[in-house]
Image (tube, rainbow, N blue to C red; front, side, top):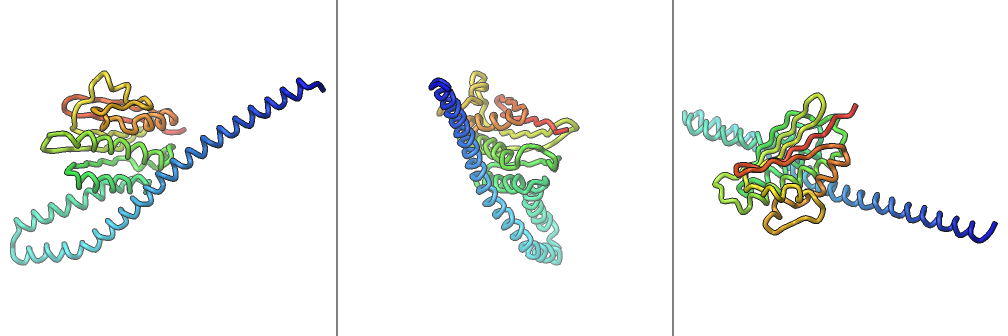
Length: 244
C-alpha cells in the first residue's frame, strides 16, 4: 500500500474523531443544561413541599378562627376570612393538577414569586400531561422563560393591575400551552426577530430573554410557537402534537 492510502486513512480517522468529539461536546452541553434545570426543580419541589406542609399546619388554626367568628355570629367577617383562605389555597391547588411534579413545583414557585412582585398569576390546568413526549426539564425551561419574560414585561408597566395567565390544555391531537400578560405591546417589526438567537434590544429585553432557547426546544419536538400582541395583551401559544 502506498503512502496516499495511509494518508487518506488517517484523514478519515481524524474526521471521525472530530465528529465524535463534536457529538460528545453537544451531549455534554445538553446534560449541563438539564442538570441546571433539575437543580432548579429540586429547589422548587422543596418550596412546594414546604408550602403544602405550612398549609396543612395552618388549616387547624384557620378552622379555630372560623369557629370563633361563627360563635360570635360575625358572619360577614367569617365570609371575608374564608374567601381569603380559599383564594390562597386555590393558588396552590391549581398549580399541582398535572402528573408532572417538576412542572407542578415550577408553577407553584412562579405563583409565589409573582405575588411578591405585585403580579397576579392565574393558572388554569385542564390536562395532566401524562403522555406528553417532551422531557419534563425541557418543558420547565420553556414555561419558566415565558413566565419570566412576562414578569419583566410588566416591570415597567404603569397598569394598576398586572396580570399573567398560564393555561395548560389538550385536545385529541395535541397539547396546548398559553402564557400571556397584560403588559406593553411588542412592536410588529420585532415579533419575528425575538425568536432568533442573539437578538436583544434594551427596550425589548423583557420580551426577548430566552425565546431563542424556547423556539429551539419546541422545534426539536416538532411543535409550533405563536405570538399575538396588541395594546391589551401579549400571548405566546405552544402546540405540541401527541405521539402515536
